[in-house]
Image 1: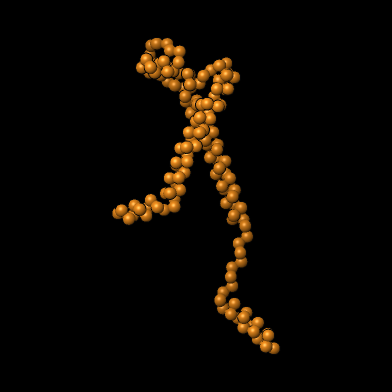
Image 2 (image 1 turned 60 degrees about the vertical axis):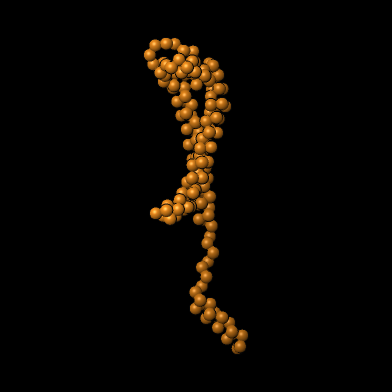
Length: 139
């Protein structure tokens, strides 16, 4: 059973999946930072100084100026600003992956379109050609 697991874990597909998963996690972190730190501040400014992180609805009583203040007070909140950030991050990530896969598929098509080398003739044909050439030299 241990040998079967080792064979399964060492197959190319599983290793490729693991590498892709790790790189995807790192790429996701970069995209989230891009959305939260680069894209959303100017967008919030353009929409009248809105900080998307502080867009929330308090469930129950109480008014809080920021999400941090509401969470510190232990208030239940619906954080729709964070949801908007995450949706934008997802769309950027999905588009980037789409472009990567599209590029890979394009490269595969080019490889498939490349003409294959002609198949080697059978051994009998090669031998007969050599015999013909030898007989032609003797004549």
